[in-house]
Image 1 (cartoon, helix red, strand yellow):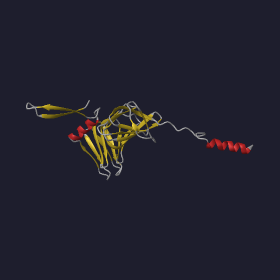
Image 2 (cartoon, helix red, strand yellow; image 1 turned 180 degrees about the vertical axis):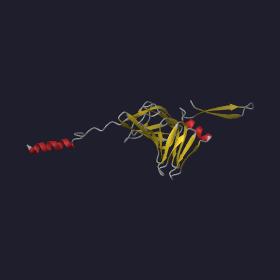
Image 3 (cartoon, helix red, strand yellow; image 1 turned 135 degrees about the horizontal axis):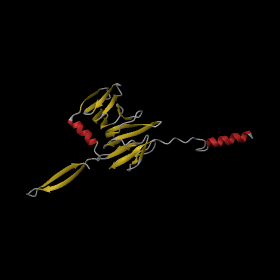
Image 4 (cartoon, one colour; image 1 turned 180 degrees about the horizontal axis):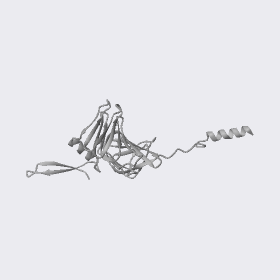
Length: 230
């Protein structure tokens, strides 16, 4: 009798899925509110697939854009992150009671952000191999490359940290933070080109071009290019 019971228990342990607790569902971070051109997403542990407007994003999901492409991620608190062309991000989130903290790991490229004011105990962060930017509620752009990171603030203030030197500073509206892998780290007033770059990163659509062929009085062709955003 004892032998039969031992055999039965062994079979239960070996049976696929038997006696194995279910894995907790990943936390929903937000959704893809807009998709333009070549955008792909990858759920944790799966393959890259074409992204679709309205798809939800769970903690650990990745989003990647191709040339002349863009994705807008709308988080549960209505914060918006615009993933510009040739960029890749990973979104994660943690719950502590009712407090919901979000993080966007910028693997490469440019993002424009409009982050809602965070409640006490909550946090919204942008991270890269070089830097950490803690957001309380502000707008601007974050550009991450192998040479370092550039944080351009149009509104509000961001607490910016360089991971190599562990130095931190606050980057206010109208200023740009520079963070490099060798520990170089400082903030200065934004140039007009940087302010324009941040404003472009916040636009809702990727840049589009209209091309016309016109002719002068002598019948000579001339090409007219008009760049615009919806």
